[in-house]
Image 1 (cartoon, rainbow, N blue to C red):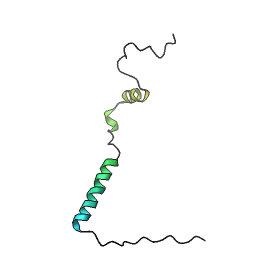
Image 2: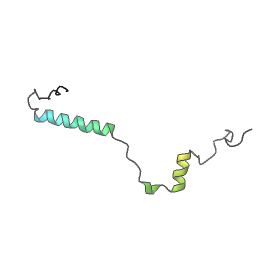
Image 3: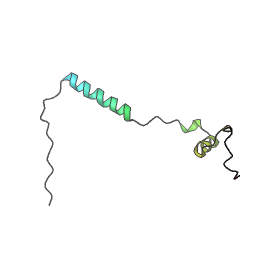
Image 4: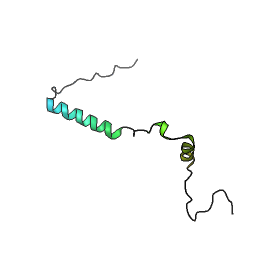
Amino acid sequence: MHEPLPRSQAIAPTPTAGEAAAIVAALERFMRATAAAPQQPAATRDGWHEAALLEGVARESQGDLPDPWINT
């Protein structure tokens, strides 16, 4: 049989209005800083564009780089 977990108790007095506002502001700042980046709606990309992005296909050639499909 396991021992019961200790219960948490608040030992400090209730925060003042200014302290409570500072806590809320810190939490909001933390949530904004750690939130996931907003995603673009799927309707702005067509299927070909999405496939090109997933495959890493460039729109224009990369200059003097050899063609990866030719083994010379």
